[in-house]
Length: 396
Image (cartoon, rainbow, N blue to C red; front, side):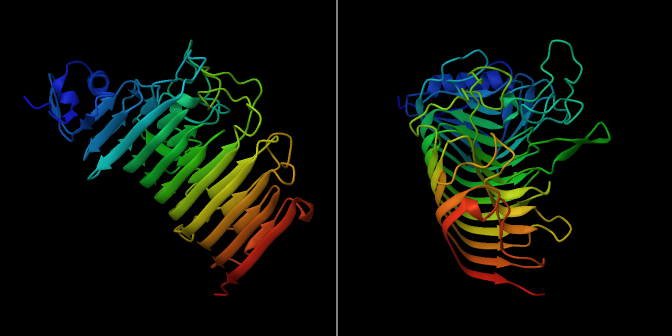
């Protein structure tokens, strides 16, 4: 008898996430894919929604197909939507995995909870800075952390995330830590920095779209669209010598310590065809490295700012900052950056807030706002051998 090419959670018993994880366990490493279909058929009846009480956990050599389905976090969930199975609370050593692939067929939507237990990153207090029903609840962490991230992969090589839409995420929609040789493509976001909960508009902070963290390299990001409450795409190499893996006191599930010798540099990343904006007034694409961890060999080719006139971003592209890790990164730590084919109406088109050298900024159109297309906020002493060409400021 021929083995079916896929496994579906409709074949199993239990809660929705228990059934999905059982299907993953059966299919992992066999060459069979896990298919979450539109129709959820369980002992409770049939519906068009899959509710997650905890994260879908993906081991290596797993293919997860989201087939025209709608997946949402339940109000009891304080966890990721999807996480690589090598990391989590109390896991102090994140062992490498490979071969994790997530893709949508038709319309695949992943959505945050109606009443999130926690939102925001590890620096935000629930009930003060950002919303969470766990605010003031004894025994529960009172700050955000990595569990608020939608899709979280750590130390994964040969991966892909394709053709999905993510709505009202609790923090960053997708975060990659020390991942390599991967593809993010055809991903749309709909998050605006707030959400109506029980009839009251609540603040949900740190709703980035895609974040690449320490050690990410050889990654392609292509065809990203929509809007987010915070940066649409951010590459952030910000080490912390006190951060350990498996803690709930960080927005990284892995260690935040710099491994040294360039291992945690963010490098060899290509970003193409970005069409979107930040509804929270931040940045569309942000490149940020600090404290001696370098960022190099980055290409951003094609950014179209789609923001409405009343909702301008601070910058279409921001490179560096002085507010993290003891100030501006040393000259030479951020280098070989190419930014080209940018059309923007942001307050700043290209904003250099840190150091930059051996780089090219070209084919830039700034419109609907006065001012220069390239702003050096950090000071000329932090910029060296940067070629700026074919810049047009439209006088409308």
